Image (cartoon, rainbow, N blue to C red; front, side, top):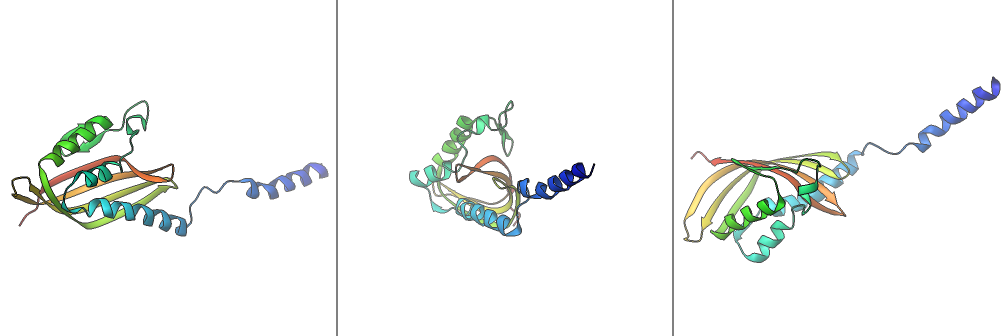
Length: 171
């Protein structure tokens, strides 16, 4: 009985050392948020004329495998009144949107980040923006609220889920 009790105490003493760290420290969370913020701000702070290099940089922030992200159902992107279920549809939508735009001016009004895990961050933004079309007409101002799920894939933060609602901003 005494040996069993000592064995039990020994196992109990070793248990904390064998457990894996499941909670992130505040410093870990801040580092993760800062990494995502840096990428996010360059994305949402997109101002000026559009060119193919910018568009390719912009599209590279999306998880190219998001069709398979949450099997068995594909990730659906909600963009205003559209539901987009494949990466190909998402890329095609952006190419069509970009094709008739000359420039965009965006500014982040409010932004919130929540670290869900070491490799997942939820971002919620309120953004003001205008769009200048190819015919040099400025549209807007608009207000948008969006939600983004950022996922760290092989050391790179990518958008895996995106939802945005947009409305004309009241003057």
